[in-house]
Image 1 (cartoon, rainbow over the protein chains, first blue to last red):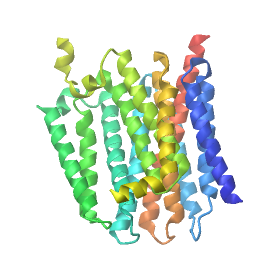
Image 2 (image 1 turned 90 degrees about the horizontal axis):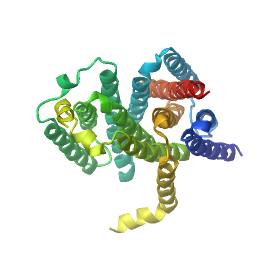
Image 3 (image 1 turned 180 degrees about the vertical axis):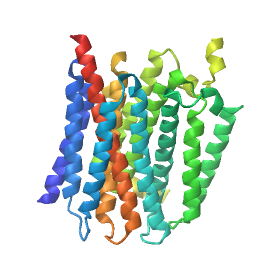
Image 4 (image 1 turned 90 degrees about the vertical axis):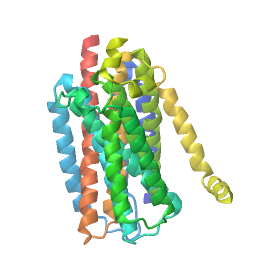
Length: 283
Length: 103
């Protein structure tokens, strides 16, 4: 009975996300769409609190405490922020969502390493993916915030031959991921931590060469990343609304990124690769 | 090869869901006016906060004496909640400004 109610609530929540996004892409209904998506999220979170889990200890005090703290911080920062500083605020929020996925994946991997639960190969792969995408979204968004806020100078964080360095870090990441994946269902905690740190570094390095004016496009792309990491985490918990919400944001975010590039008369590759200040000026 | 076929067979419904959701996401966004780019990005960002559900489940499944998992889970809930509440609130503020301009 209860489980059915929870599942129907998830269905309602997911439907609200879809219709909300639809309404948000038309000026006349945009605000209504946002409220509908908010309602969908509230239903989803509430349903999760009541989701029956066999033998779970629940620890509701911890959940309520954390939700109150996070809710207050989020609300106050959203209300206090200057109108002109909104894009960087979105970037911070997005980064924290990525950080949430990282914390989840790292904790689950830590438990695997301790030998708590034996994961299937598919689960291990998905956890590693969640860790990677979430970490890149986190540090990338934070650097994007720093650049938009004027805390970080574009030129000072860009190394010579930066694209080559990016490729090298990415290659190293892929090798490390394959190593951890192949080494079995109980990965060593040192390797997982190394993976985490390298993924975090890649996020910074990925955003570093991109010029300040292109930042909104990158934030949109990183937003899609956070969505994908949420979807991957949803696979771990076999939670439908996490999967639907995450993938929806992932695909919508990628299309939005492309549309934003077009509006600026640039291609996505152009934004990501040719991001040096001098290149823009010479055009 | 065998194991790949097995995986596809067992998760067929999931694969349908993934593909249709991706197409749905593409379709929802493809015709959006420039002025709505930032609010839409912000709204989508708030929705990506669904990851908080994972953090809630992590805490609910944790042993009450396992303070490490509880603390990490609580950290996850705080981060996710900032994303959700902040994200929707900021989007609402942006769109409110937009409505006023139109009138």
